[in-house]
Length: 630
Image 1 (cartoon, rainbow, N blue to C red):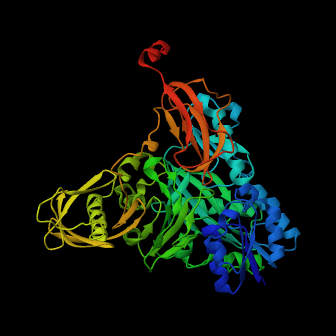
Image 2 (cartoon, rainbow, N blue to C red):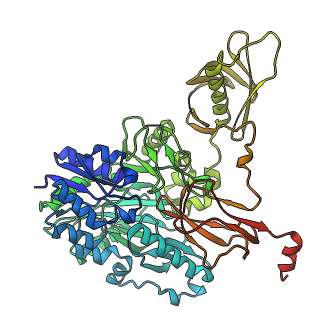
Image 3 (cartoon, one colour):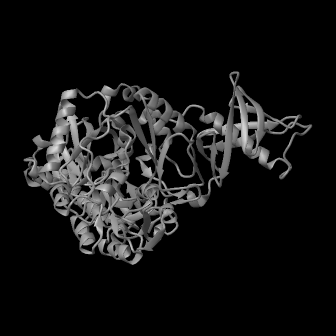
């Protein structure tokens, strides 16, 4: 019997496994990097072992250090979680060689399936060789052979960019998974991403625990997932089950795993088999009424599964809440998560709590919010309601995007699901939510209420100029009234019902609404809206020379374009350098054609948001005309 489990992972992943271990009476051990010293998964574990350093390559990807940590803490089993070393056969062998129980598939099965190239070969599917790709093959997808989560993936639509994207994908894969192998496969536009959950024991039993649809993705990372995958024919579902079970039996698979397919034109194309638990496994748990982590432990202890899995019931949807700005290229965000609360009655898997800091080193996912109900319609209604009312005070998140996605007609029409959803709909989904101008009014009046009397504010016999507060694109004008209240002069049509420093009630078109207001420096959260105070005067230090390339986020410079030097001519859109933040690479390109007059970026340099990376002096119109051969 397993008594103590070390989880070779961090954040939400580790917290999820710890929760089941506590319910089973199994002790837990965390490992943590220096950047994670105060993280929630460290606080929740019974014991924790430090891995010196911050970068994954120094810490969570060091299998030798993780095994040493397990032995030092007295663990008798290791759960790999999902991500990092979870699909590393050498790590699995090192765990068992140390006399520890490996809560995962046999190393041989990992080797056969964790490399997407070898998995395809095993199933008779040969990937394209990069040197054989022609214009007729485009578009193609460059993909990391190991790992997942969208890292090490690039869509190539122009043959000239293939070589550069191969290098970029390889570098990103090596950083994320310790394996830089990449391959090329045809890219299917706007297919559905459908997967099958497997669970296998050591006695030959193979469970197929339904389907999941994971089509709503950005940067090849999933955003919203659901089970069962809606709108599939019974014949197609049977085919997916048969192919998934056959793949598992072909390699003697044991434990939890997932087989992924791209469904297009009524057919299913094999993508890969993930030899681990998936991030989106909770929707399967909710539909089947099982705990997959508990079953993983049971299988690792040698216990047999029942001949058949439980019968499914109802529907479940999971929304991933990220600290990112979808309107700015999904840029990850950092900072203090001042307050984080989700109403009870739904499942929330998270690695953060109020007061925690979101750093630059790891994935920006804050939490997964999961809802189960008898019908898909009931799930969408409850999940939307829950997300709207969640309290998320801190960096910018994708919460508004999630709400808009769940309400979008295409998503409601389940047959319209495909991986191109955000490519088609992102501009509409990232428009400011309705009512933001009234949230700005509430923020201004809360500020006024908090400062009344402190700076001589209040009503005067002689009417003075309106007070003005600006938040982003919204400017609010108001004045104190004789009775101690406030009159709003812009925007029009707003009546103030009550105003306090922590909350304001407004009446608009005869309808009264209350806005809870909380202020953190120059950021205000008002009734579910996140607003940034617009300064009255521009700080000269914030002004940048024309053509300045500023870091869009804090991160590390991982590469500079080959041979790039001050004085070089560059063209608009030309990649100049790459930043890595939160395990994703972000390309910084020339804003216009011109001359590179400054280059402050160098590989390995840590930069803060807004740091000057380079300057491109744009060509004068006459110069541009001279260089244009047309």
